[in-house]
Image 1 (cartoon, helix red, strand yellow):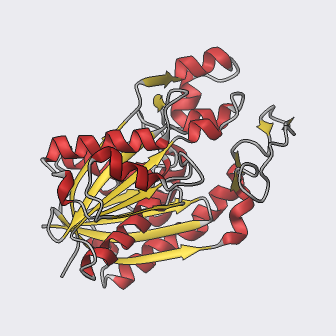
Image 2: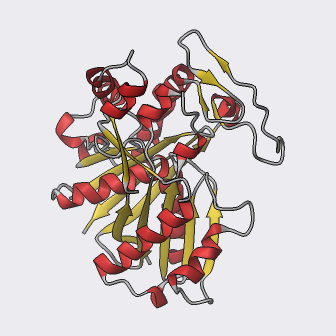
Length: 332
C-alpha cells in the first residue's frame, strides 16, 4: 500500500503588513532593499487574539469545503506548530472537537519548524501504510509574529503567519516516496526563543541591542542569520543528494524542486549552489513571506494551480532544531 497527497488548502490571516508599513517604522530600510534581499512584499499577520489553533481550524475547514472532504472520514490529525494554544491540552485534540471529526480518530501535535511539513508527511505515510489510519489530516500552523520583538526589523520583514491543511490517503494526486531526515541539536542556540518553556518559565526582560540596533532578548525569537545561512549551505546540498539516492534517482529525473521558502536570497543561493535550473525551481513567498512549516504546502498548492506539479517533485525543508528533511512525491 502506498500513501498519497490527496488535497491541500491553506489559510492566511486577514491583516496584511506591507513593505511600506515596515519602512514607515524603520526609515533606514527601503522597499527595494526588502524586496531584493528578502523577496517579500506582503506578509499576513495573526490578530492579537488569533492563535495557531484558529488558523489551523480555518485551513481545515477550507480543505473540507474546497475538496468535498467529509470530516467523518478523517481518522488521524497531525498538527505541526511551535506556537500551540496551550502547553496542554494538545491543540490537535481541540481541533478534533471544533472540526466535528469523530472521537475514534487519533490526534497529536509535533513541535517542528521549517522541516515540519516533510516530517509530517513521513509520519502520515507511516500511519497510512501500516493501516493505522486511512485519511490523515496534516496541518501546519504557525504564528511566529507573536515570537518576534516589535523592533526586530530583520525578522519582521521575513516571517508571515499561516496554516495549511493537507490530506494524506491511500490515493491522491501525488505518491509519497522515500525520505531523508536529519537532526543536529548542536545548532539549537542559533534559532531559539529561550524563555516560556519549563527550562525558563519566567520572562527575563533582558533586551539589548546589537551593533545594527537589532533587539536581542531571551523573551523573543533570536536568529543568528549568518550561522543559519552556513548551516543551510552545508546541510541542504547533502540533503538533496541523499533524497535522490534513497529514491534511486538523479537530479535530471526531478521535474520540480520545492524548498522551504526561507527568503529570496537564501533559496536563490541554494539553487545556484546545487546547480538547479531556474525553470525547475519553484518559489512562492512574495505575498506570504516565510510561513515556517507551511511554506512547502502553500508553494505546492500554488504550483498545482499553475499546472506545474508533474512528474517527480523533490521537497526539502530545513531550519530550526537544526532539523532537515527531504522526500520525493510523484504525481500520477
